[in-house]
Image 1 (cartoon, rainbow, N blue to C red):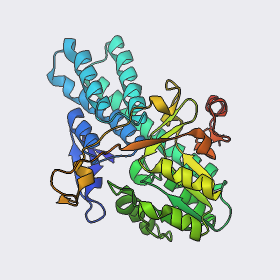
Image 2: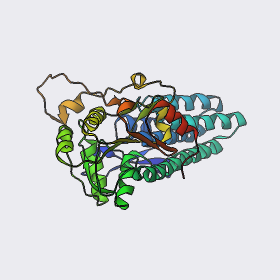
Image 3: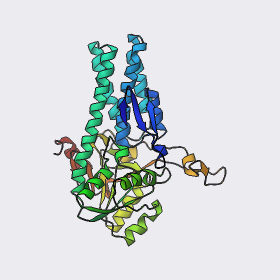
Length: 347
């Protein structure tokens, strides 16, 4: 994702791994549609996209009477926030730029100054995400012993962030340091982010990896020497419960049974202290077509019923540690989470 001549240039992740196709989003509704339709996904990345969506809305204010500017921006913010409900990073990105807009409007900024300032705020938010990924990569790599075999779920790589990745960022850095020997990405049904996206990233980086289907995880843990499971998160509650892609909860249970550390890697913007526990995190229900069809072809009888909760919640008791850019939350509980978030960012 990159700003390109007044538009947001987005790699359409629906087309991967077979084709690299880019979309140009020129308006906030186009950004919201790209988020909703999964052309771009990943909690940190949709936060950055939301920030740019507000900046794009500001670009269109030159054609609108000044009295309507605040309402137009607020309309764009609501549209962006409604695009996907679970990842809290989207709210952070939108609110960050919305607050900058509020201050500038009170100062009487003209449309050109407003648009430039909001784009700069979105740039800063995105650069901060990239720096967070670098810090988390270093902190997370330190948790792994040399030559580790690790398992991961969904896609928490460069495609899900401003760059580098959260969980996959840790894997990348640990591989450079000789601390990762082999990676087992789960395919992540029904949207196949593991097979289409994570494996694509790992192979491009030359990191030894073997794709497994989701229902192979227990067998691989029992028969191979797995040293850690590393995942990302879309929202972390105040008590350190973790919402992530559907299937994460099951992996955490399996890891606990097999005595394998279960690490969550996520920036502090993923933490929502307004939500007391995972029970209060909204779980997005997506179209059941994504369950009964694969690449447009039906894999179930006509008229079949299905469910598609896109996320699940892993209780904090199953999490060995949460890696943030501010430090490692270990043990993963609410008290330790607050202490780490209140401290300075790690070097």
